[in-house]
Image (cartoon, rainbow, N blue to C red):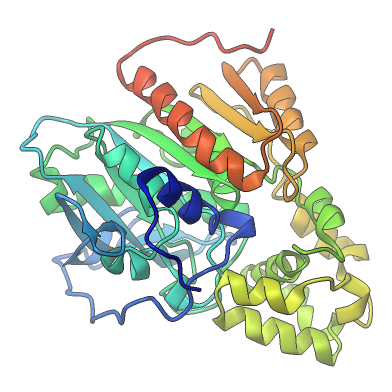
Length: 400
């Protein structure tokens, strides 16, 4: 998909229109990856250890370079099943001369697709990663940013799409990896850096799960707050809302992602020929192509029997439900009231669940705004809220 060169305001809108669960990915725009240069990594890597790193570049739009230093990294993390894995990502730091501890945001992107060419790191050098302008808004504030590619994007195996357990660890370990990266350490990214977690749509799920997981999985991170928007807090309800509509492709993507994380679910036995065809396409495609291929499909159109009616599938899907644990740091939750992709009630429900656990929740709704519109309008308030947390300001939230 070609976009004409927009104005500054138009650029944000055009790019965000390719965001998250309603995106149309610019397929074929990713640049070929060179072989990663090996670091002096430990023989047995632990979660967050840097396995390899090589210099890269970050453009927030094609032909718009930034005054930053960036590294494409591979780092150790943990799969949904609790096994060690390797995840790719990018660490970006402003070239502002700062060497004392600077804030670090670990950023979780919205849906890009399932093919390796769709990974955020693949598009950063050419400015084709959809959320790069939103990430740049953090960089111009002087923050370092770590962006995970998630499990299976740019690394062996299929992408474990919407499997929150794998996403949350990837997000937290990206922050650890940034703090352990020698080049970033020289520029003020350290274990003393205040950390913010941030993401929208799929990234809202990933960031919210990371917030719930952090105290037990990565307690050493100095997390000051989490900003999560458009959160698919209950995948069962998202599937019900998407089935047979314009976003139906995401239902199959999620099924493929869960099958990748938990092969014992045996997705293939539930699919008919059309389902197998779409599943194979999804594994190697970016989001726009997947959406087009799946548009209007109902679950019954691609299956011989519905896996979501089976106890093992129900258990796997419900294991992603957010709001069951209390984040240890304050949270900023936002959602568009006209969201056509992630039902507004899911944002309200997550707020209520966390408020009931005495979490300081700052909730902001966006009247009349769609899924993409809220991604645009919510980015500034989310960064402003995180900046207040980095500055040590307290927040009671607005649960009352």
